[in-house]
Each structure stands twice: as C-alpha cells, then as structure tokens.
Image (cartoon, rainbow, N blue to C red; front, side, top):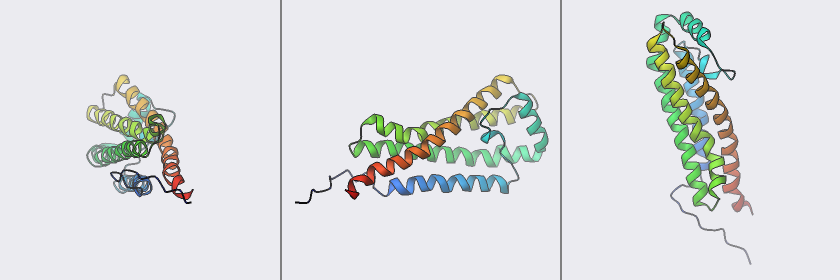
Length: 177
C-alpha cells in the first residue's frame, strides 16, 4: 500500500518555498542595478570588516552633493523596501515550515536569517540616512551603530540563503519519498 502524503495547510503554498527565495535574489540584483544606474557605489553596505568615521567622511566627500542626495533619496528607499521584502519572506518561511510540522527551532533557523537580516538592514539604512543628513558632521556613535548593523545584516543574509535552501529541502522531501 502506498502511504499518502500528509495534508498540509494551503495558507502558504508549496511553491512559495521556491518563488519566495527567487524573489529575494531578483530584488537583490535589481536594487544593485538601481544603485549603479543612479551612480552610487554602495561601499558601506557591503563592508564585512566594518567602517569608521574616516571611511564615512572620505566616501561621502568623494560622492559629492548630488550623489549623496541620490543615495539618500533614491537608493536608500529602494534598499529599505528590499529589506522589508526579505524580512517578510523569512517570516513566511518560518510560518510555512511550522505549519508543515517542523519544530519551531528548525523553522526559526531556516527563516530567521532573513527575518533578522532584514530588520538589521532597515536599521542600517536608517543609520546611513542619519549619517547622510548630518554630513559633514559625522559622529562616531552613529558610524559604529551603522557599521555593526551592516556586519550583522551581511551575516544574517548569508545564513538566510542557506536557511532558504534547507527550507526548500524540508518541504519537498516528503514529496520525493
């Protein structure tokens, strides 16, 4: 006799575990494309080692007034929107795995990277906006907070990619059996 596949809630469709992470990857590339099109190289937001006041002053000085304005008014809002999207995808991954019978801690490990990474990304973008608004007066505490959020965001986003792959494996594994 063939064992039936367990019935799961259809509130979060199975396809979400494929198109949700794909949406995150496509939006990641689109925000990078938008930033390049605006002429704003996002050096601070991809610095794994962190940055300090001298780095921020040097970069903002090189940007000039118009590039700083484009960064503040065009690139950062797009990045905040992207951060909210991947945080929501992380939260839905957690809920979808929990609805499919996975323990909460497994679900949190799979979707928590993007959930926490998105929240850190929003905090980082708000901190960078504050730095841009207050330039040329750059305070060490603001830079330290922004740098810390950047490093956390990068770590959590990377963990979120691995978590999304594990989540897809976990939800499709019963179908392959």
